[in-house]
Length: 534
Image 1 (cartoon, helix red, strand yellow):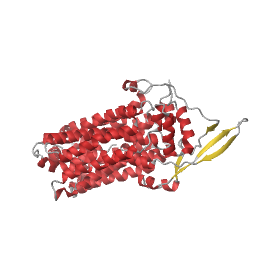
Image 2 (cartoon, helix red, strand yellow):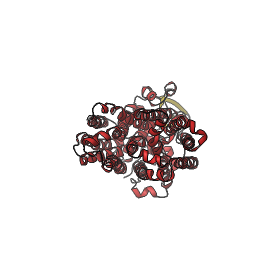
Image 3 (cartoon, one colour):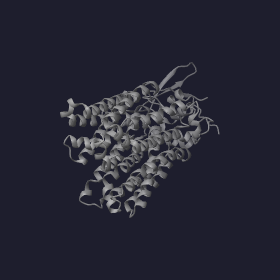
Image 4 (cartoon, helix red, strand yellow):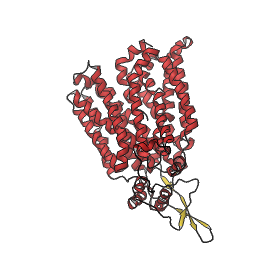
């Protein structure tokens, strides 16, 4: 996830770069006589993309792909013989994944929109010389996101995934409107706070909803679309800021643009099916069957309902409370989720993005926009590669490869600042290290945690556990942003980069010993292994 760092670091860059650099009830679903047996090549939801479509380079291919279904039903006879029968699916999850991805676009857009607009809105609101109030305009979004991420889990459990999206559109729309029409700094901060609450909720429910409605064998590809659209949202904010130089009041239009996808999100979710897993958990059998028919086709209703029943999601267990997340049954998977986001933040993405503009200027790239565009393009490109590999190479291997590449990149960046023998090549080496780091980050450390969390968490804790992990993400990001400059000033950027490289290596070892591979496995199968019913 997270691409948050690509959207919030530039503010500090304007004010501190030169100074720091100088310092170096009971429910059951009975199976019919015809029991369902899964072909090992098919998912529990029986949807498959043509191999020719999957050979593409990422999420763009997925949306152009046609979805084929294939399941094998076994008719049990009196003597135990099995007859294989094919069933077809007429449903498609892709339009609903697309609607949910509007939340990811808004996530990235609200993170990135302030970078270009801050200088101009500060002049317009009379705070051009007040760095503290400018900091509040930036940081209020993070504060709101922290609140929203914790709130999103409870809302999703209480009202369902789609209704939570509808509620989420309210602060997103109102927040963007207040920012666009603000005539004083107080209104601007309130607008940013509301927008932050909105993107905090989105950060929790977008990956949750996509994971719960996606077919097993392309769940990784579709799940990584969340990160891809966050990156696209940040790039959209960058592009939206291009007219600022000619029109200083354009910053209001930049914030107003955020209203459009918010309204489209609400309209789209009004017609989107609820997560069948949540409906079964709520014992709403008829509604669950209707949602499955919409998503996967009428032929998959019996199979999916049977699988959800076997998984125990319709058991008498009550919805988990917040303290249940720390019980012996769930503590390990919850700690893994929190650790992945902690490693993501401590691995140095803030530092690389923070100094990217200075690095590129040293190498002769004078344009801040060009530098930001290069970093953003590397992030989008890497995420597209990751989406094409997610269901082929697996989540765990991508995470380990990603953090390994980040460690090498950090070492290269550190040496480019300190080794005298490399001094003549320090500019190009720093650019190579920066781009390589962002590419490595986007291959695994960026998209995988938000995808993996809804997969490893049991259904009764999924929404709250995802919200808790993302809350830790926002808090750690805020703390790192608060103390990062002081640490760099005291120790120097080269030593800080070496520390980040060490953390990346620790992450590789932690992932190797604690993270399970979820590629090609249904959510129910993963739940039965990691969080068996007591």
